[in-house]
Structure formats: C-alpha cells, structure tokens
Amino acid sequence: MAFSPVRLNHAVLFVADLERAVRFYREILGMEVVTREPRANAAFLRLPRSGNHHDLGLFGVGTAGGPKRRGAIGLYHLAWQVDTIDELADARRVLAHAGALSGQSSHGATKSLYGADPDGNEFEIMWMLPRDAWGDFEHTATVEHLDLVASAKAQHAHEVFGFVGGQLHTRRGRRRRRGCPSRPPPPPPAAAAAPGPRTARAGPPASPRRARPSAA
Image (tube, rainbow, N blue to C red; front, side):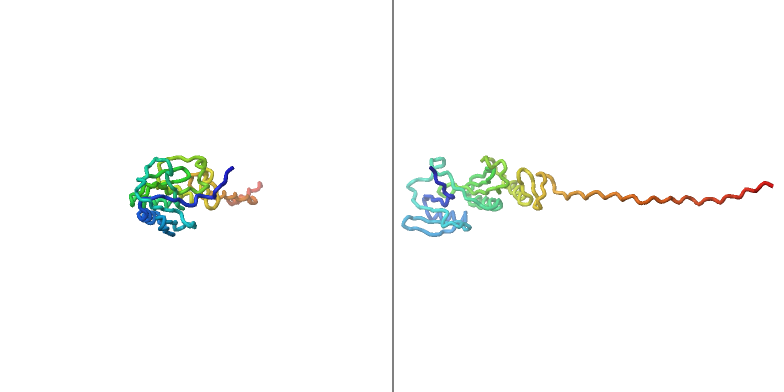
C-alpha cells in the first residue's frame, strides 16, 4: 500500500560554513533569507517567485565531516527550475562568471545546467519544454550535449508557430508541415466570362453593281 505526496517541497543541506553557503545561494540563485535558527546554526531561504514558506534549509556543521565526495552514496543533486529558456541562458552566464558551472546537457524534454556550491553540493538549473513539444521525449530521458543557442531558437519558433505532433500550427490555426514557409493561399482562378449573344460581323461595304445595258 502506498501514499502519494503532492511534490518535493524543500531541500536541506549540511554545510561547512553557514554564512558562506547563505551568501552563495543569495548571490547566485537570488534566494532570500526567510528566517534563521541560531540554536541549530541554520538558515532557511526562499526563491523570490516561490509561494513556499522556504525552499532550502542550510545547517552549518563545520568541517568535521570533511568535504562532500562526488559519487558517494546519497544525494546526487537538486534541480531548480526556471520558466523560460532565456532565463536558462541568463543562469549560464551567472554560473560561469561565478566559476560554479560544471556542465550542461539536453535530456530531451528538459535542458539542464549543472553546478556546485562551495561545499561541493551539486545542483541543476533546468528548463522544461512545453508539454505539447515533448513528442517522443515523453517516454525517454536522453543525455546529450546541450546547444543552448539552437535550443533557444527552436523554442522561439515554437512560441510563434507551435509544434504539435510533428506538424506546425500557426497562431491562426492553419496546419502546415514543419520547415515549410508560411504562404498565403493562392487566389481562386478568375471565372471565364459568359458568352454573349453572337452579332454579325460587319464586312466591307458592298460595291455598287453597274446596270447591264439592255439588248436593242
């Protein structure tokens, strides 16, 4: 017998230096400190557009436990979602500038950046394609190189036209095949003029006949 939670609500991390970790998540992910618990050497942070009480808890435990070792049994990373691919591109610039960017991948329906905080806790910044653009990715989770520029161009094309079921839908609802330029329908052929009543063509005027002389 199972129960079904609604969603993952928040994450909690042990960190060596609480203030260093708070500074990282505030400056890089734009989080705000909701509250602190001095007795536990803890801080609770929230994303600015979140309706949650807090999205991340940080507990300072000093260096006794040693640095986090990648590949050890336990949590691999946390994934933070952004709303648009343009925000994902912005996130890449911020992470690269801070020296916190460690990789980027395309997983089909999601496009992801990877980084790590000062304690080695890894995280993912991800953007998800609109549901109607998943296509074959709905039942796959590939790991491919992420070309962020190409993905952004494809998404902007989707926002203008809309890819549904391998075909392209314009905002006006007309369907056409992907990759075909949009053209207005050709005008209907002009109706042939109905024939009118026939009129006799005027010929050259008849030359007058000369009277023949009568026999005497």
